[in-house]
Length: 163
Image 1 (cartoon, rainbow, N blue to C red):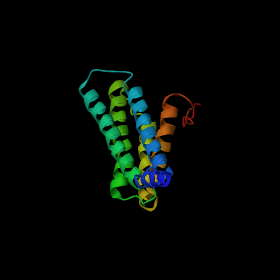
Image 2 (cartoon, rainbow, N blue to C red):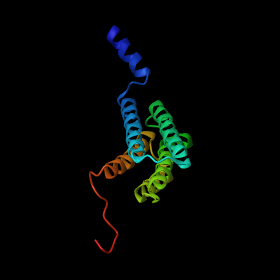
Image 3 (spheres, rainbow, N blue to C red):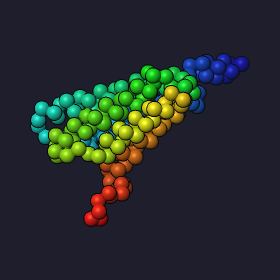
Image 4 (cartoon, one colour):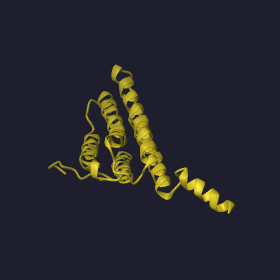
């Protein structure tokens, strides 16, 4: 009887498989954003945009963490405006900071970050019909592909006519 009561209290506390998956995806998303932050700040340059870029990247990770909490609360509910804004907007804000840091350090805009922001925007367009857990998984997939490409695990195809 006691085991049933413990299981029932655990289920009512939100520790179901979908909630655990939501938490794992949220933690992994923040970890990938942290990795992108470290890659962006490797070539540290002292200028006025460096601080703003770092602040944007940290704020984006914090917003993504709030999105993790919203997904954890109800993983299979259709994503509302708040979930879409935090789950996809947090990484987008972080990537804007990443673009600013890259532009300040090298003078070039990293196209891969702009493509990732566009992919997040496309996911946002269909976000209102997706469960929150699927939305979070798609955001994580976009960021994971970007982080793998940024760390050199694979290269995107070149669009140059010289290659």
